[in-house]
Each structure stands twice: as C-alpha cells, then as structure tokens.
Length: 112
Image (cartoon, rainbow, N blue to C red):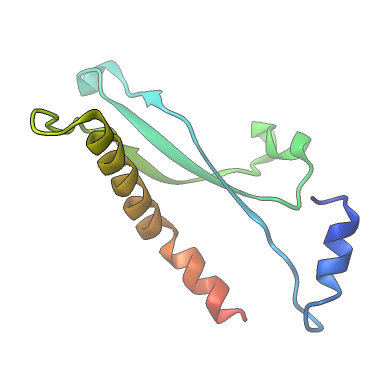
C-alpha cells in the first residue's frame, strides 16, 4: 500500500492538507505468567500502514503499540450448540473491539 500508485491516486482526492493514515490492528494469543494460574489473553497492537513492513515488524523500531488486552474467559456451553457458541464468541469479540477502537473511530470522524 505505501508504495503503490493507489496511494497517490487516493491522496489526490483528499482536500489540501489532509492525508491517509491506514491503521493495522493485530492480535495473537499469549500465555500469561505462571502467577496467573495458566490464563491467557489476546494483546491488541496498532500500527500504521504507510510504514514499510520491515519497520513494522522490527520491535526495535517501536512501530507497534499495545492498545488493549482481550480476556479469554470460557463460556458455559451446556445449553448451546457449537454454532451458537461460535456466534456468541464472535459477537463478544466484535463488541469488545468496537469499544477498544471507539476513540480511533471518533478521531477519524472529527478529522473529516
């Protein structure tokens, strides 16, 4: 994205002084320390898409920031089908991510 012709074409559509800032959100399950009873969490990281991948992936460049930890709690599945369980987990994830990303969405709307 950061080197493509698309970038320049879209940038030319914006008002003078405006710029594109693509946001990349990433998460990966991690085990917490032994003091937490073997629990795990999903850290949520944010970086911007107009950085080269080599910069984004190098921790020493500090191109990623931690914005949240998502809990990994078990749901009571006794009265749910497998499809209902998957659906509920997806709805919870999307609701939580909506809350986590609300300030970013708000800032984007204010910038328009």
